[in-house]
Amino acid sequence: MKPAAFSYHRAHDVADAVGLLTELAAAGGDPKVIAGGQSLMPMMTFRLARPSALVDLGPLRRVPSMAAISSDGDQLTLGALVTHHAVETAALPDGFGVLSRAMRWVGHLPIRSRGTVAGSLVHGDATAEWCLLALLLDAVVVTEGPGGRREIPAAEMFHGFYATAVEPDEVVVAVRFTRPAPHAALAEFARRHGDFAIVDAAVALDVAGDTVTGGRVVLGGAAPAPVRVAEAEAVLARGGPAGDALFAEVAAAAAAAIDPPDDAQTTAAYRRRLTRTLVADACREAAGGAR
Ligand SMILES: Cc1cc2nc3c(=O)[nH]c(=O)nc-3n(C[C@H](O)[C@H](O)[C@H](O)COP(=O)(O)OP(=O)(O)OC[C@H]3O[C@@H](n4cnc5c(N)ncnc54)[C@H](O)[C@@H]3O)c2cc1C
Image (cartoon, rainbow, N blue to C red):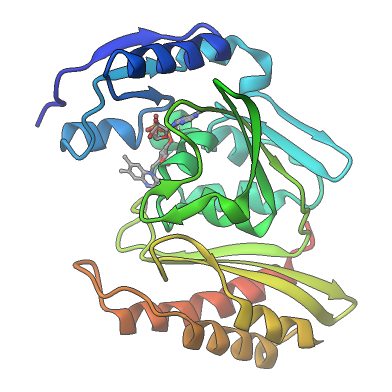
């Protein structure tokens, strides 16, 4: 299929993009920004999205902060147009290596070379690796809109099925990760290599010597939006030796806590089973890697 008709506009800087979005909406349209196009174009060709106008952020790659990876103390900032592949191949500061390692799970190389961090977060697929990583590492999504700059903590970002806190007239300019996690991993299962996951699990462990003292567990595919699982995190907070016994308990707590969907892809029971396996796998990998 072909997309429904739309007008096309190139933004030259962030203010220009916000101005175009505001102007086109005021004229009665339903404009959308396009970054890598790796989610929006398929949605448009299947006519699941019919924006009246596209505001292309491509030229903003020349704005240094929009495509830059930078760090300051314990924080890592990615410009909105940083691609999945740029993160996959970057030498990230200590505590953020999980971002690079997780990128191999995102689609295929051509998709990773065009798709952007902000595009993934705004698209808000419940299994998108960036959405899980944002919750795992306390990301803050920075937007510019007609009302100025806004900072959205990851905990307030994901509202449900493909719904996020970013307003239609806002442009994400950067994503700041504020919680380094030297012991972190993401594990997932997809039907075919490069597909979105059926279930994915991201885990960060607080480790002292050989003992786990706390941590975070985030799941995709368990609910309409990515979720932290308090019941599994409570097991980690109780602590214990880093090993299979503890990790099996964390995984069982996660699987018991969720109420996953039964849909055309698979059953709720299978998602629960995958959760159990993947949380344990992610815990093991997180305990092993101190990068
Ligand atoms: C075959 C295939 C497999 C894939 N597999 C995976 C996978 O396994 N995991 C995964 O996470 N993704 C996967 N993707 C999606 C891919 O990661 C996309 O790159 C990503 O979802 C969107 O990024 P984008 O830059 O292409 O955004 P676009 O497609 O350009 O935009 C997506 C949405 O974000 C909005 N948007 C984009 N940038 C901004 C901004 N700066 N400010 C405000 N709004 C913005 C757009 O308006 C649109 O609503 C897959 C895609 C394909 C085609």
